[in-house]
Image (cartoon, rainbow, N blue to C red; front, side, top):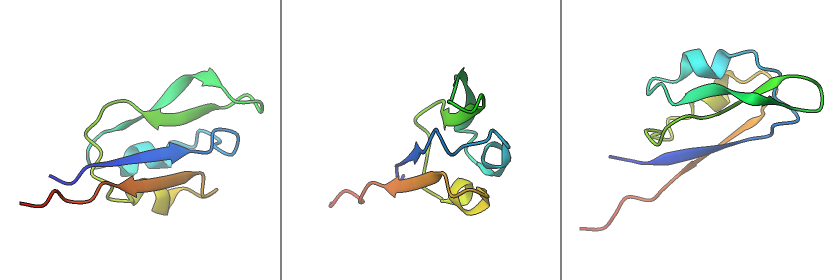
Amino acid sequence: MIRGTIIVATEICKACELCITACPQDCLELSSQLNSKGYRYAQLKNDLCTGCINCAIVCPDSAITVYRQPKANK
């Protein structure tokens, strides 16, 4: 299985939750912490991310960067 991870620009995220509903692996949640603007920001809640980029595509503020790990050689 392909593995991925995300980095959220926490100061840009406005907690719209579009990324959470777009994630087919149910990997995202809102943090219990607040950014400087008073918003809870998106974060990974488990390690099931496949790097599908759905979250980054739907983010209206481009606050999410997706990284994929290369496939292991056989």
